[in-house]
Each structure stands twice: as C-alpha cells, then as structure tokens.
Image (cartoon, rainbow, N blue to C red):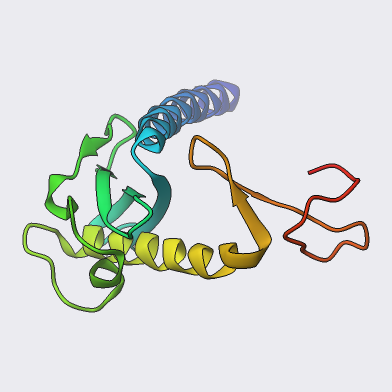
Length: 158
C-alpha cells in the first residue's frame, strides 16, 4: 500500500470532521441567538472532554436575573444538537452561580450553568457604567477618545 493513500485518507477524514464540527457550532449559535429575544444570553462550558463529556449551556437572563430560557449541547460526537434545558427556567442567577446542586442537571451541565450565571453577573456589575444595551440584548462598550471606558458616547466609533 502506498503511504500517499494513507495520508489522503487521513486528510479527507479530518476535513469531514471539521465540516461536521462547523455545522454543529453553527446549530448551537443559531439556537443561542434565538434566546436573545427572551433576554441577555450567557454561555458556559462544563465537564471534561473524555470523562463524562463536555456540556455547553446557553442561558437567557431577564433584567431581574431570572433564567427565562436555556439550551444545552452535550454529546461525544459532532452529530449532537442543542436541546432545550427546562430545568433552570425561572431560577435566579445567584442560585445558578452558587455551589448548590440543581435537581435534574448532570454534573457537567451544572458546571456550565454555574459558569454562564457567573459570567452574566460579572457583565451586570461592569455594565452599570461602561456598557449600553441594544434592543436585542447585546451589549456595546463605549470607549472615550483616550481609550478608557466611558458611559457617554464619544465622537469616535462605538
């Protein structure tokens, strides 16, 4: 057997895997974007790659800090797709960011929810003076001409 055939097979397999990984990430992105209509979306990752698998969780929080929607992407293959995570509906960000267990969540999902809630809380602390929310929930950081954050619009680009 010619070694070139083996190299071609490995490269072809890698390209197929990269294609399916791209499709999976786009499916998760589209699903997470759909949560933006409900609130501000924060994404967390939990678990280990080979021991129990990774879980990616997107949680939409409203202005009061309650989870209004969530989805999870878990699985060992690139064929996994995001599914709704109804267990966290209505929970406060403080509870999700804490160390208490949440019934109905796997350990990797719990870690991902914790990270998403902590990131959301951190962004809320920073947003009091340095960011402005857009109608779809995205946040824009405004910079003053000197490059330091400012709450007032500057003459430069936003």
